[in-house]
Image (cartoon, rainbow, N blue to C red):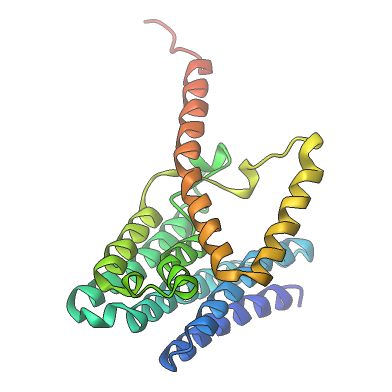
Length: 247
């Protein structure tokens, strides 16, 4: 019974992601995006609920991956296709397929490495590539900009298609990206961090699309720093590793 609560939250995330497709078919782009964002929030808390009630299970892990593949792979791909890529059906559909398949491949790679002991990125507190929820949020960046700017150029499939392909590549890449465990705040700035969270939450309520645009750009800006941080940790580990005994 302890597994019911986290699995129910995962199922709600799946329902939210699928509902985003429904709103996209109706041309309600704002609600379609909101549904994907709600799925991301639910995906972020189901694991914590499972650990809190000690309800982790292999079934829950598999359900979570299937939910992520649909909510953050298939749903954003279809939303972007219906919003923009349909204007260039051949190349647009290829990019939508690439994004959805690469998201599934990323999740499959993650599942395959669950029982692997030697994981350099994970042991250092980093992720390999950008996670699926972040990929979904980044892939929809052109829609955010279009919603608050009204500029039709951001809806052009010749801009959206390469952007979607680029985000798909980041998901399956071997780049070291920050995870929550790698973000360690010093005690003297924890109050300031809470203030920043409150400001971002208020901005999301009053100006959601502008705020999401800034958040996406800020996340992309952290990639060079995460890559450099991991390389520094890797060099330190190699330097501290004992040298093999001679002959």
